[in-house]
Image 1 (tube, one colour):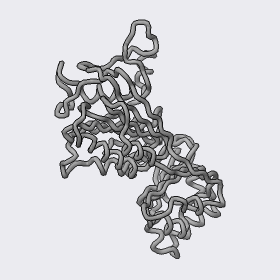
Image 2: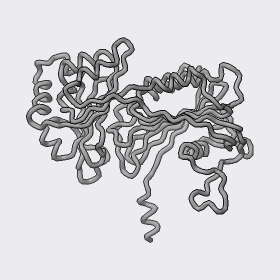
Image 3: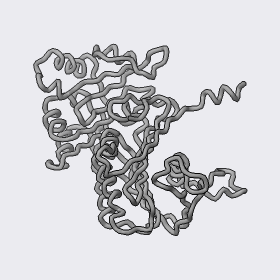
Image 4: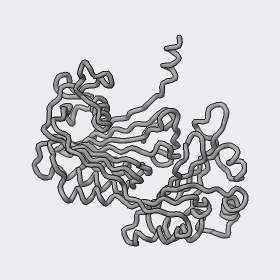
Length: 363
């Protein structure tokens, strides 16, 4: 009975797999990357590769910068100056840092100008703002979601709605958070955000990059047309997904009898590649940067390569209030929301999207 209870308490996960071709005009790959706003880790694996091209390496090194601002008052994100400087002139991203989505108040600024607040019951009532209960609250409602369209507010700064929001953040319930901030606008200087928030404790950061060559890597055999695999011919997408997790976590795939840490082994059929290149980027990584990486990897096979496929994996912040678009995101026992592309040498691709129990189905 106790075992059954523990099984029921185990976190549930949802994995959605689909296949398409980058040349298909109905392909959703770009939209799905662009609407997964808050990414903290990007990894790609290239079999039969010992060294990155200079072009790809430069692209990896240009995935920043992003900024950390300590104790930033929330009202700073709704001022007319901030809206006109950053939101109207590019894609501005902000996410509270050092907060837990299931316990604390959290805030996210989406690139379309929507400000999303996930507030506990007391804070929500004190702000006096209109919102709705979190979809993952359960019977006892403890969290509320407030959405504020800053672009709409900026159209009439003398409106009662703007005055109410401004009064709430400045006087009724002043809130301060540590924020991660990033701004994508090719036509402006990167130092603008540093100077704009100069009166606060602001630091500029570059994502951390880890490059490594893996030798004698056992890889599953894949066929782009067989998402579910074929017996003794190719592996299925789910098996590849598990295998990638093991590779990125540096798990031994040998399944040795004296290894009591992991008994995992590569799915079959498989092949051993002499060398593979693994790159992991960690930080506050914008969808625009990931789109560039994906586009470059799509063109990896423009020249003849030994590798039959490459992968690009992206993990979202576990404590982000949203996953894709405005879809509410919760933590429960993992907080995972991630996606993975398998890019084949014929321009076919597999797309795998995974979320935990407190999440909507991926789009």
